Image (tube, rainbow, N blue to C red):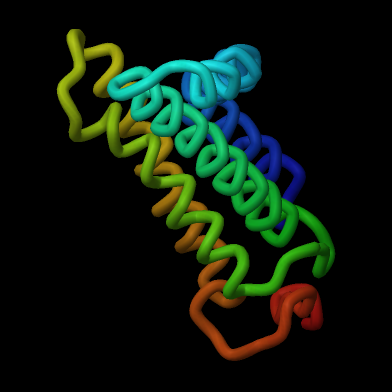
Length: 146
């Protein structure tokens, strides 16, 4: 893969995942407070805290899976997770993003911010199809072996 193609893939990931990465960062910042609310509040407060903490955890799993797939696409057979763990991380990461893409949001901007990572995930999955959809072991990139 050429240097220009690699650069364009990184730019695509930055543009598509940028807004949701900021939302994840905000979730990480307020997670300690939500953890306190989980143990001190009752009823609806606990449910809201639990949903936020689960969303942050799922988003982190998705970010790890994104990094793994991106490393496989860009690097010479460099992955740190197996295919099954990558799939699990991708599926978990899609859950909180789908709340913005398909859930009740108050503006088209939030909807676009939720749809862009999903489209990028489809594109990266296509590019990493040899890793994600085959029976090969992690770390072996057949394109690099030619």
